[in-house]
Length: 237
Image 1: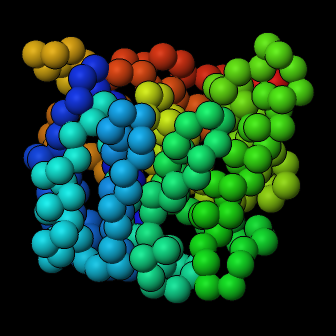
Image 2 (image 1 turned 90 degrees about the vertical axis):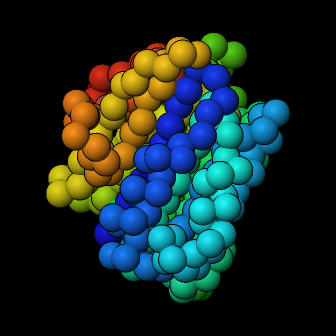
């Protein structure tokens, strides 16, 4: 099953320790591609390749180049869609007034998906479409409740038996959501000279005090700090 990694920082930083560990340990069992997204001046840069990350020099080059307040990475085990660059996560979509990147771990089998493409990309598009419609319905509707509405819409359409771990960012906020009983997500706080850093991953990458993210609650990180941990999404809105 795929693996997710995200980082939210108070100032632009690299992840030249955690990401190589992430790739070394988990890319052999997720051989169908890797992807890495980061931001420069609020513009998303997405590097990806349908190769085993630990054996791919372009992965190391991407890690060295990725300096940002937000980094999102993914290792793919392809269950839906062909093995190709287009199906590697994170996916990029301009919406909600920003470059959005999205990486998913899980399967939503009943969602309509173009031939040879992934259900994950279709989930991303459906989530952002629902969030956008909700925000447009009222002048006081913001992005965070819009994302929560998008998640709730996915559940209403495809049921709660789907697997929906994801990371989503607009370059400022990093949203994390966990709904996969056999695959929890974890968070780690660190303090650096410039301020806070938070790592989010589907694996505990170190012996530090990683905390399990409660399922079905939307975690919102901003510049290395927890901004919101929502109520259970099905009870919101």
